[in-house]
Image 1 (cartoon, one colour):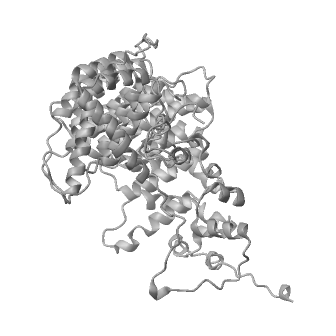
Image 2: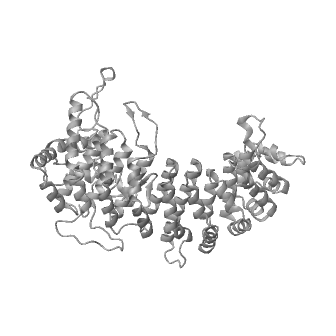
Image 3: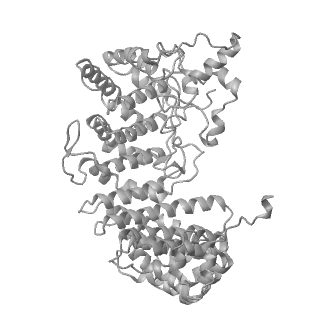
Length: 620
C-alpha cells in the first residue's frame, strides 16, 4: 500500500543547516528559502534569528550592492532579504522591533544623501512598514526619539517609497488613541506646512508630485477616519491644519508665482480639488458627482477653502487665458499652438468642483469673469481633446441641474417660480450655448458631407444637447429653461426645435441600436456549414432559449430563464438608471417625453446604456 512508503522529500535547506559552517548567502541561494521561512521551518528561523544573520539581512537592504556585479543578480540578496524580513514571522518581527541596534542600523538608511536608490528605498519602506503594523508602540516610540525623522522624510519625499512610508504611518496604526498620538506628533512637527512648502516652483517635479499626493491622501484618510469614528472628541489635527486659511493662501501663492511652473500649479490644484471633494473617488481619476446642494454629499466643504479660492478666481481665469508657455505640439491631424496643457485642464476641473459647491458669490464671480464662456470656446477650439470635452460637459450639466444656490452661511437664496439662476441665464444668453451647438453641428455635417472626419467632440455635444432638451421638460430649472428658449430669436428657436426632432433624435436612435441584432448571422462561403439537420426539438420555447443563448441578448426573457441580474455584479452605490455613463451625473433622461424620433429609448436608458449623463430623481 502507498502508506508503506515515505514519500516526503525533505528540503535541501535542512541538509544545509546540519552543517556548522553554512552561510547566510548559501541559504539565500536556495529557491525554497522563502517558502520554508513562511512555513515556519524551525531550524531556518533559529538560524535567521542569530544576531549576525539579522544584521546581514538589514545590511543587504540598506547598502548599495557592488557596482561590478551583473545587473541581473545585483539586487538578488537585497530582494530576498526584504522578503525574509517581511515574511510576517512573529519571532523575526519581535527581534527587529525590540533590538535598538537593529532599528538604528535600519534607520541609518534615511541618513543617506538624496536621491535615494529607489529599489533599496522600497525594501527599507516595506520592512519598516510591517514593523509599524506589527509593533506600533515600539516603532513609533523609536521614531519619536529620532528628532530628525520628519526632517529626513521631508528631505527624501521625492522618493515615492518614502512618501508611502509616511502614509503607512498614518494607516497602519489602528487603535484610536495611539493613532491620535501619531497625528498630534506629526502636527507638532508641522508636517502639513512643510509639505505645502515643497509644492513651490523652486522644487523639482518629483517632490511636487509626491508632496501633493501625500497631502491629498492625508485629506482622504482623515475624512474617512472621521466618518468611521463619528463620536471622537478630538478633531483630526492634520486636516484642521490643512484647511486653515493661511495654508490655503500659501498654496494659492505657489500657484500664482511669477515663474508659472506647471508642475507646481497642477500639484497645488490637485490638493484644492481634494479639499473640494464631496464624495469619495469611485475609481482612479473619477469622482462620483452628486448634484449641487443635495444632502447626500459624504463630506462638507470648509468655508475658508471656498473663500480663499473665491478671492483668487480672477487669477485662475488669467491662467485659462495665459497658461504656462508650452512648445508647439504636432499631432497626427495637425498642429496645436498652444496645446491645452495640464494647467488649463486642471483649472477647468477646479471650476467644475466650484460649480458643484454651488455658492452664490462664487457663481457671481464666474459670471463677471465669463469663465464659462472661455472654457466653452476651448471646447470647440480643441476638437480632439476629450479630456477637455468631458470636463466642459460636466460644467454645463452641473449648471443645468443646479438647484437653489447656497450662500456663504449655508442658507439657500430665494428664487421665484421662473427661477433666478443667474449662471444658467449666463450660459444661454451671454455664452449662447444653443447657437453654438447648432453652429457646431452644422459645421460637422458639412465637413462629413465633403468627406471629412467627424469632429471629436460630437459625442459630448450630443450629450449636452440631450441634457438641455430634458431640462426643458423636467428638472429643477425647467421653467427658466423654457423661458430662455422661448426668448431666443425666432429663427434660432425654430432651428433648435427642428434639430431636436430630427438630427438629435436620429442620433439618439443610432447610439442606442444593439450591437448584436436578432437577424441571421451568415458565415463566409469557405466556412459554410449546414445546420438544417440539427437534432434539436422543434419546441418553440426551447428554440427561443437557444436563440437567446446564441445571440447573448439580455432580453427580459433571457433574464427570467437564466436568472442573470446585473445588480448582483454591481456596487450597490452604483445601481440605478444611467450608471453606464462615465461621469455618473445626477441628471434626467432627455428622451423620456413626447418628442418625435425618441420612441423606445427609455428602456435603453433604464438599462444603463444611455448616451447622456442625465438621471432623474423619482423616475421609475
